[in-house]
Amino acid sequence: MVHALVPPHGLDGVRRALERHAVLGMTIAEVRGPVGDAHREVHRGTVLVDLAPCLRIEAIVHDEITERVLTEIASAVHPDGRLWVVPLELVTRVRTGERGADAV
Image (cartoon, rainbow, N blue to C red):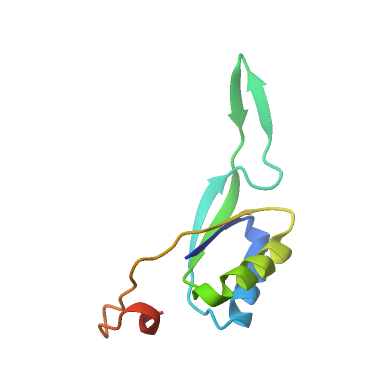
């Protein structure tokens, strides 16, 4: 599973990168995090960070295209954002009972 934490203006680039590889399903959540030009200051020894609005995008991607998808997403949102990959042990489509790659 590919996770991307990007500023809101990065959504279209991530969506296009995924669509180029026929990854059409994704989950998008509005979150806040230190993305892009989040302001950081120290006040009485405590680091304070203004958390910027951003999007967390999750998509299940086949192993063989993961590197290409990451490269394209990074190009689309450069220089802002964070990307990471989490391996999935099993995916099941509840409606049909399909498992593994068939469920993706």
